[in-house]
Image (cartoon, rainbow, N blue to C red; front, side, top):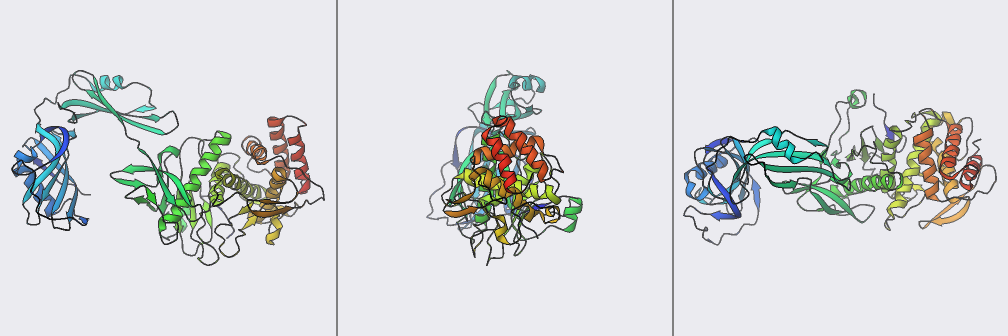
Length: 545
């Protein structure tokens, strides 16, 4: 059974034998006569897709074969239809890839154009000559692989292809190597090795890191790193472990999802024809996705910059987000592999994709993969408190003027009061959370017993008394009437992170957390340091001794 940590309680292709010519140079449009097709005054205003296995696709392949002087198609080649469109004039444009003697021809793709009446009007291609080369290599696959080098994490088995991207088509081994670039961006390099001479013909990086942006609901216009595939842009970040965001389309997981891991909604990956996502309003389903992806990105960067942690799992592997989960669902949760966000009820609460909540949910994953704090009793309160702490630190780290850092949790999607679900300076102000420890803390819902840890952290970072943070009034008193001086957010967060990752275990309670943070402060700042003394004073101030 999965443990779920929540924010609050409650194309078919057709192959035809055809002919091919070899190629070089820039793409051209050839007509049946070899000249450019005449301008008939037609203008295209839109296109729509056609079936790649339908009659229009088959007719286009016949046209390619019967107009070989233009398409350079010969009988020792095969064509595979990969895309087909019809435009507003009724003309069809069918894209194909080619093989030669059973080998893929890199650079051998073409588009066959036919008018509304079905007449061939030309083809777009780079190939301008027939392929006449032997497909028998003199260099073995293993030898080709050795020419690529060993810098990559993994080198796959090379594949024999025809490389027709240069003036003279060549038989080549295509070797794909995967690894990590210097800046930790994933790497996937295709290297073409001449199958006769062993010379490296060319290499190309397949990971295309695209800078885009999104208009979010809560953070304004934010930067995004995207993945480009076949002319579309995916909300998938190759620089942060391929973290991505999908649309749950207001569905919910089945009971079997939590029990057996089956019946879970994967969602549909958000894509765009350009590098811009969202409109900044709920009218676009992309807007909430932008918030979720942005929140994941900033959280990733926060942990990396401050603790050297490479993602939730510290392996460089990303996770995923689902937005638009359920109907009137006022919650968000981490289920062991991904973050999920509801849309709120639309009246009191909007989508729960605010930056601090994104940091909160992702931090549940960090806790799960470090101390593994059990999600019940006092350890459960510490689990929730850890997520509130680091979700808040992520908000400060982002320094986004549209959502400045404060110690309120979820104030951005609180449409009615803008107070959020919890506040760390005065947890008990919500009428349910605990500001001070008592022996009953283990019996309180973890979202409310988290107040003890939240209160401690606020006092440790900011100190007691009244102040304004992020334009929001904050005021914190102590349970023992003492005054506490804060040591700053950076030092406080470093102490909590070390305590979490080095000293806390699955059953750590608040007394154990006191010991863990004292040990962490000693490690970081020294025995008897001002920071260690502040940790002791902070716990005493919330009645943990």
